[in-house]
Amino acid sequence: MSIKEIQEEIVSEFEMFDDWMQRYEYMIDLGKDLPLIDEKYKTDKNIIKGCQSKVWVHAELEGDQLNFTADSDAIITKGIIAILIRTFSGQHPSAIIDADTNFIDQIGLKEHLSPTRANGLVSMIKQLKMYAVAYQTQLN
Amino acid sequence: MFDIQKIRADFPILKREVNGKPLVYFDNAATSQTPQVVIDAIVNYYSHYNSNIHRGVHTLSQEATDAYEVARKKVQAHFNAKHDYEIILTAGTTHAINIVATGFTQFVNRGDEIIVSALEHHSNIVPWQMLCERTGAELKVIPMNEEGSLEMDVYETLVSPKTKLVFVNHVSNALGTVNPIEFIIKKARAVGAAILIDGAQATPHMKPDVQALDVDFYVASAHKLCGPTGVGVLYGKEEWLNKLPPYQGGGDMIDQVTFEKTTYAGLPFKFEAGTPNICGGIAFGVALDYMNSIGFENIATYEKELLDYATKALKEIEGLRIYGEADEKTAVISFNVGTIHPYDIGTIVDKLGIAVRTGHHCAQPIMNFYKIPGTVRASFAFYNTKDEIDIFVAAVKRAVMMLS
Image (cartoon, rainbow over all chains, first blue to last red; front, side, top):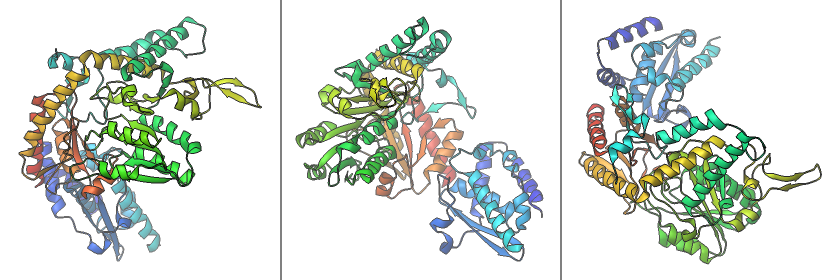
């Protein structure tokens, strides 16, 4: 599936819920399925800055596909990073670089998009895309 | 008489909803809300006499100058400073601290010592570290204990003739601990050290008397006292303010300027370079009037009631731990529940209309002491109610259920 298709899938999953509580509960559930980062990569170097909670991300190239693993010490943050990784993992770096992330707004998590928001969703997106840029260069 | 409903009606923001729920504002230690009289003063200033001060002969400038200087006198009266020119109006507490820390460069040498406490906000640590880097002086830290109090017996061993300046906050922002500043001042005084007290977190809850305290410098921010942001106060004893060099160069702080030499204006203008926050200063005066009309004794009594009520209710939540349980504390509760990240709790209670602070509260050394990433901090003001505390406690319980 393309990034866009996965995003549409996530949007339709979230549309099943009427209120924010159910959406947050679902997000927390998604966080439990997050492909966890190997402990050896849980270093300060891999912490995404700009988040109030700690978020570690690791990226690995498999063929021409980029795979992400991550973890966070906060459950909601873990849910958010899980949603992002679900859309980006297994994709070609160039697709990740070009992807837009407006679906976050559509699933009712708009409040997390503000650049001043302490959870740093914006920083997470930026960091994932930076990995894609780095690996894209490697592929070229 | 303390009429909570009447007081709440003074604050228009308390009527608003957040995420479809009535706002419960428990982030007062970050900034207080603004009563209508202060909002009116700001509107009135810009509607009727907005102009630059201390320089115009025209009517508007005279009116604005008078109002600004009246505000200074209100601040003087509030803190019981001996002279109005001992009140420097600044951009805030951080600015005020930096005026002193920078000015002390010439009074501190290698081998000298500066004492700060372990309970400080980052803004209180960094200027002194910078001063030490500039001068080669050494920074000494008064340690804290498990209940969040400073260890006075250690402090006594730290104070020596090498001590040039002691800097402590009156109340800790992260934990609400009221520090024994009378004792700290007395000991510093005995070795001839200067003393600067940060009253940012104390002044919303109590009325310090700088002469009775016999403190050299005392700083505070208007925005925690129902005033606007961008205004603060540096109280300094006349002799110290005369000795300290100006912090910034600019208009209003000069006496004579030639390209060969400039002589500085007298107090307080020496430290007030450039056009100040005129409207903010005037509004600060109105805010102090407002708080004094309610009365700081009434405020303290009522807030203590809120603190005790909330402490008891929160402690009934399984796994909840409160950080900072000093006997003397202001209406601040810093806590965590089990291993749940404070950010998670803060996010859920925000969805329920409640504003609390989460994180390290710019006091990472305190968080390191407890080995936690941060806390949830609920801080109360005199316009909060027990009903709001009930809503908050229920929200925390709901968050814990969702997050466990």
